[in-house]
Length: 179
Image 1 (cartoon, helix red, strand yellow):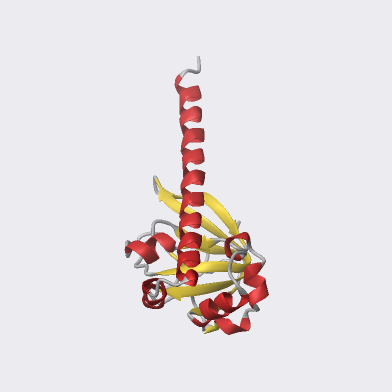
Image 2: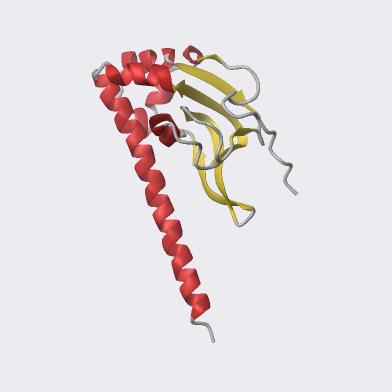
């Protein structure tokens, strides 16, 4: 049996203390496809807007329905994404290094649409809404690239959700037509 993840209060951020994101080497972020178009200087500037979280396995980052307003980049480790369906947690995806999560809440201000928990010891970078809005208002090349990264993450999540729905539809059809 898997131990239950440690819980956190909404809008507090993950448990423990954050540290400056500048401890992450810019080359580490640039090694991910979602950040490969960024220059070394742009990554350094982006890192100055973020906080670093080192989280142990089974930590809940945020829960479905909790207040949002931040997004995270997985630098090391992996994160499970699940939703409550019919009273049970249903796994949607496991996100690996380079993935962005929480961007819908960051952009829209809507409550979290899923629960995210740490599958293996993980390093995350977090950006809050206010520094993100400042960045995007600046209309710089960095702002355009970061917005494209946020959008790419949302598109990837939507495609994965569509595939899951198609699979569920096919399974339901098989059950409905079974003798």
